[in-house]
Image (cartoon, rainbow, N blue to C red):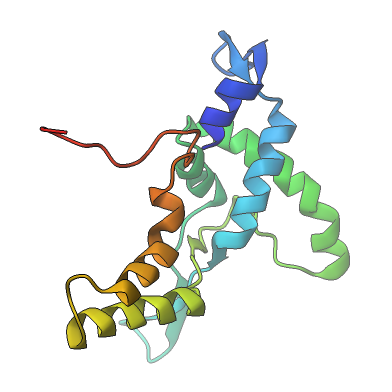
Length: 174
């Protein structure tokens, strides 16, 4: 989605990473866009017990990933670009981490972060209603099921999704 937006709305600039002149946005603007998404999907990985064979003491550790790896996957980019974005965001949040004792979500020396997409209770309720409707009521020509599917998949199926490209392709006859 961001890639499409850059192609449509941006101007040609020389990239400081690949040195090619292409449509692009300023690195700080990219970091701001990443920050909005990143802060909504990141959590600390759950700590799991790691018993030590030589003693009765159990050591707990979180097995997650570094912010650079997560940002690299988000942007589908090279590691050096992801590192630059994480560096900008780390500096941006540095003051609130020190002043408010917040968690440093961009601490690249730590591998304790994971992507967590919260479950939407309304979506779950709609999906369960759809399943009940199809299982225990009419399966075909069911207006209730159609309404539930429209609520769940409506944005995906409507024209204009991702810059006027429909995600559905008709193959064959027509």
